[in-house]
Length: 180
Image 1 (cartoon, one colour):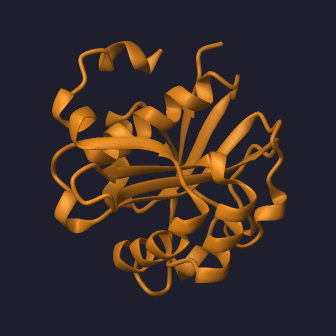
Image 2 (image 1 turned 135 degrees about the vertical axis):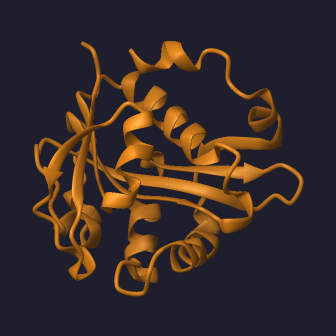
């Protein structure tokens, strides 16, 4: 399992950030981070973000900067029994199935001033660890070609070009399979 290679985590990240589910009063921050971190054609609307946070907050993990109290980065997803990523997951939080065997990652975002220290990797690790404990089978996401190596270093396998055309972009589907 992937978690064994992360047993010796960067203690500075653990000391600097609190990793937890998002709170309802953090919708504005989450929507703003989305706007900063994604291009205009890829960004999810405030309404979509609000629906996710209100309906599936347990699948929305944030890294809170302990000094400022603000969100430095976040990751959110939706549970489903579907095996392939589809764009409807971005726009309809009601597709969430709490008992779903798979998680579709809808976004991983770290504010520019917090990048380069391994925070995205740590957020993903914390998320994988949490979902592994819920007996999920796969974590599936889409990314641009330039991010494939980053996700491969996190243990994801490149499954080729995705069926997703979100934002009129070409995406690659990445999959992390838990050892059962």
